[in-house]
Length: 461
Image (spheres, rainbow, N blue to C red):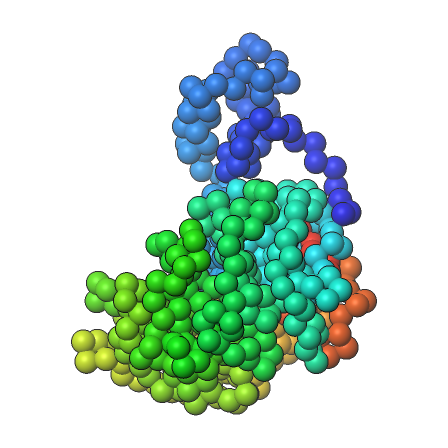
């Protein structure tokens, strides 16, 4: 693990997350501006004398200081609500030459394209080591590896071996799915395995052509996954034990590569999933099919659906395009179906009334959510890639060259606010592979990955 700069903040060793990052900010403010008004004790003794009353005082202080950033964990794929949006504030609105400060680099992530979850100071991902895939935990602040847990046999693939999914963290547990369908639940702190289930052997699924890649969903005590197959394409397991709660017998399509989301459809909780030929809503409580809308997927269906105001937006690459579906008591009705957003796998994010992402043959694009109209597109500034959002800014990552460009989140066009190139980059990546892991924004940090290399940048003001 390589450090980008010395961390001169106090070591809050006796205080558990999620308070640590908050206290670091508080103590910085106290040391530089407020401490003389608070106590005659020295700053260096302040940590030792922290009490619950003083912590409460610090909390009141922090909430009254508007310029400090609002931090946020990132517990699973595309964030806590799977929209791809971070609600953090107080982040850099433009970058200096060379980009934001690099905090640390580690080369211990193994091979693969797995993304990150960041919860209570831990960063969770997956990687391939030899002929085995592992679930990994790192210290999100320092980059030090904390533990690793074998998940299953290595997924081999012509575009690069290793896992592709993002672990999910909930209630002190972390859940991860290997490329060959082995689903594990582990203690988030120790890495001790609690249970495991095979999507193939136990749930009747079949490994898709490029392996299982979905990031499983944890919701209200249920672990929702997509084994595919005749026993039911979607299954819900008990999050504590791994025991089967239900399997969608009315919906038996083969698994694809998209990840499910949770929605409220006219007051009823549903899980929405996209596969090759169908977009479906499944009752969260029973597993019964609530509605279905046909889709013309081709080769692979990957992007996660986007839900808002009773509508579901989906997109696929390979020349397919996008459509918006309106949900009602009568079922699902297509609002539009066009080619403006042909998103392969870099993700689509909705901000206010518009959707943003990379569209094959169109470039980086903004379309209107309700109408599907193309508002703007840019083919020249950056090649194909992935997108993340926080604090009115998009973080756009080029998959071929590793360029990261910060742009304004606006329907007024591509407005760059700084850029840098991911460095170092992996020399071990499959020649056909690219930089496909999506950027993650959490607690004032940006996390990037190229195979075995994870890099953390400080993006706070």
